[in-house]
Image (cartoon, rainbow, N blue to C red; front, side):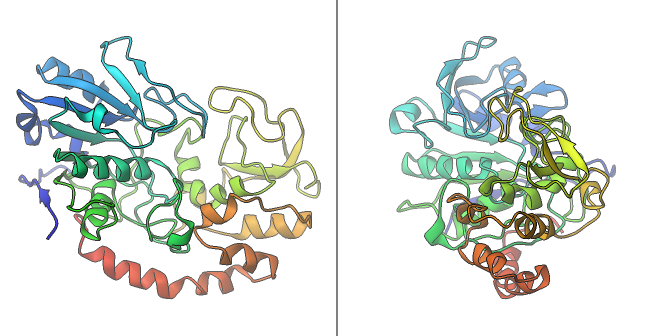
Length: 378
């Protein structure tokens, strides 16, 4: 029997989507007179006020801030190691969970009585905020500390697609046997992680989820703030499930340009008309092909970039592979992003997108059945 609590109140008449963090009346009373640890970053907003500032104004004792990939302020490069720090505004210690340590230690938690998790996820398996949540849940269970997840809408929550992870390829960019696009909010996924026993602890996490109001899995939720430096707008968020695979190849996905994850290219793809030259910039200090002209496609005007396509697409990946015809197209990272060794082999063998997609169907259907019992929203 796993511990899992929902907090419900009357649904308001307005159709405005209300994230869990905005529903302070449901969780602030649980924090009063306690030492609180908060796992968050720049996306943890209540309207335009950060959750931490809001709680401090209410007299809540925040002892530590734990931050994920890209850091507390969200400016660091993908993969850049984040150091521990002190927040200059609040003077609260910041513990990095994206450096040498990805899981809070007993020492980090020795003065913490309750934990809050609040971050805006994008609903893609290889986006690492959910891996941070996994380790926080594990640490909370080990140290018998209650965890409250403030749920936020999933901007890619309107479909499910991609191969289900083979757990033999478990890594920080894929820890759970779920598809690339899994169609769950971060709160729903936390319940699944707990309920399926995916955290490596003798007992489950004492988990409470504060749900959103007026959100459904058909919603097209527009993020109020960029979730990370290289997902600067909704076009990038919608294209990320398809273009994220390029991180495991020789092809650039536009890091170091004004339109990351909205274009792709390579210096040898000269038959494509679109051109871009990656340059160092915040969030992409040393981008792939820095200073070299790349040729490829600009996808900003496509239906998928508008959130009107309910699937990820492999066509960009397949046509890049077939056009380049080079032996080192894939790197060792690709299988971890894909969550399977099969996808690389299928592309190398000339499988069509439909043939590859058909190979996912059985596993996706099994996942959908499992997912049903953890859904908070229609």
